[in-house]
Image (cartoon, rainbow, N blue to C red; front, side, top):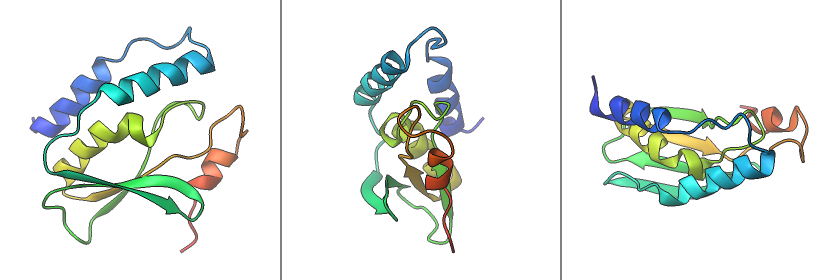
Length: 124
């Protein structure tokens, strides 16, 4: 198994159950976890504004210039962030040899459906 894919699987398996947390507790948990995670070596992160939606480009060294992935973090549209997902997005970038655009779409309940989905739709 590829080392980067193995690292992503281990990160996901290490997360505790969040079913009984309130939205506030869930977000606090994710923020705390994000602050404790370290990026792998030779990965750059550039914060950006994607047509009014905050996000970041995550690029591992050696990515193919014509390879791009749009990454939408998990969290059921009520939690999660580009920061929370940054570490495993970095591993995915390295494994896929692609630049990754990770978005901080709007979250419910402050921004009800379809706000988060609307943030992820780009007109080409």
